[in-house]
Length: 149
Image (tube, rainbow, N blue to C red):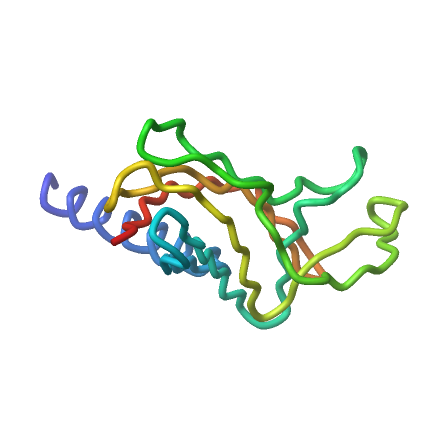
């Protein structure tokens, strides 16, 4: 009886795990390029599965959760300006009763940093929300560490 219960529990956990993996329509990649002795640009790329979209950083209140970058404070670097994004798609969404801006397929965000040390790692997190034409997933948070050499 204990073996049957254990096997059942393993099957249930494997099934839940498989479904959880299906609901991850965004993958993130990170890179940095030095543009001068004391400057670099961070590249944060979101690859978005077909039929899904990732919201812009510039969403008005009352709409979906916007994409938001938070960088951990450090004596090794200073942020220069805001995190930049390309021009998004903007459309009216009935669900939110407003125009919303989003990205499909992939988007490359950039952040300029001033370096106070020759090599460092810029750490932080990105909070984001994705939707398709039938559902929105709860907001997600991903931490990152981007080496700058």
